[in-house]
Length: 205
Image (tube, rainbow, N blue to C red; front, side, top):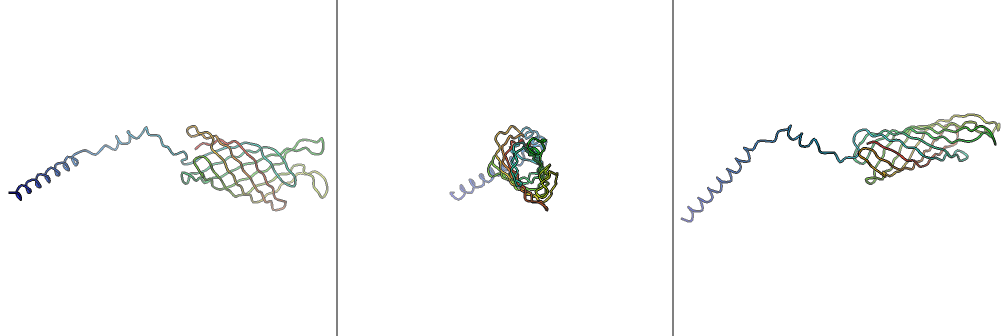
């Protein structure tokens, strides 16, 4: 009798489990369209996606035998590689005004550069960058040390750059930040040119 009772209980349990499985299988799969509609209003939490842009403006210092102060502007376009890393292409330039002679005209020396590189976020808001490429230095009405006569010269060569920054304020896809940078230009026919400074930046990612 005990064996028969155990057998009946086992059979009943198996039939109950089979019935539950059948109910689960009978449930219709959610419609793909319904799934898409349910997720349509979900906003992505990723800050950087696809192609990103930024622009920076600020004061600068340039060293080329002597020191010149001025301003700089830079434009950057990048493509997101990972949530923390962006491949970048940067074009920028700076101008350092100076007077020719004691009371002469005000002219400006110019540094321009184009660099390919990468930008990496160490934390959610702090980043560093490196780049390499080429650049030019225009020395306008600079004194020729051989003839002691002011003249315009232009020098081109390879360039490298490094920078660091912090994202201060984010509003949706727009970021206001502060950065520092340095550019080293090695002209073929002249002494090295070092330019650096700080800038406020605005980025769209």
